[in-house]
Image 1 (cartoon, rainbow, N blue to C red):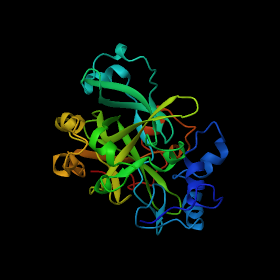
Image 2: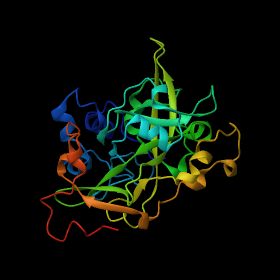
Image 3: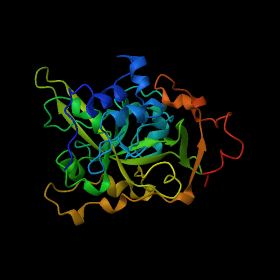
Image 4: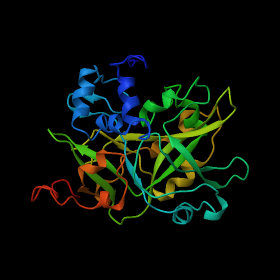
Amino acid sequence: MARCPRWKTRHGLHWLLDEAHAPVQQDEKLSHRFLPGNRSWPRRAALAGAGRVADTPPGTLRGDTLIGMCGRYVCRSDKQKIAEAFAAGEAEDFAFELAPSWNAAPQSTQCVIRISAQTGRREMLAMRWGLVPFWAKDTKVGYSTINARAESLLAKPLYREAARQRRCLIPADAFYEWRAGKVKQPYAFALKDDRLFAFAGLWESWKDRASGAALKTFTIITTDANELVAPFEDRMPAILNRADYGRWLAPTEANAPPIDLPLDLLRPYPAEAMKAWEVSPSVGNTRNDGPELLEPYQNAVPGQRDLFLS
């Protein structure tokens, strides 16, 4: 398996992912400079020696194309709407605050649906985006685990146990991808009926050995791109059909054979049920997070906006 450069190598991939996905409060200018939507990102990543095809982490390159990356999405729905859409009880049952996000980025806290070990029912929790396995020494791995490839979940220790016992739903209203070119142009993707949907995901609970504080994290599973997403990216988030939510969430035994796991649900979502439209390059900066980000881009070249629309 191809390995990434060491985490603390200044010009290595992990350093780039650290800067790209670090919370904006740490260094807004530096974080923005390395975001995937920024035109300097491909050049910087290429100089860093990225672009390995096998086991390539999110945000690296194959040629000029970012590989296997679902790095931004939208969840503008409130807790009550999410609770109703996913049959997850009542919004007032869950104490955490949930602000709408039109530009959810790695390392941010988002809403996740899972099965409660206490009640056996669906529940909503706030979790950080970037999976940190319970056995990890620290949380640094979370910068490079925002996505997990569907076809290798059981082959990688990072995801194997979670794929068997800790599956979850990540509510979303849309997600973003960037069209390659001298200036990378973002597009939004959503369902044609504008319905709230769910990415297939995995979750983990990690405990700090020094303080005892618990951290719950998640990753979004990706699969092959459908015909609508393929012009932008060779991967897309695995969107589940509503009728499959129960099967995906249902617990399985730790030693269950692969055939008993619902991995067959991790397939490209039908392109004919989706739509795409060009949005503002402002999406490339995590400091921007408002409803205007989902509006059709007014400066699009005439005729270009509808080029990839389903």
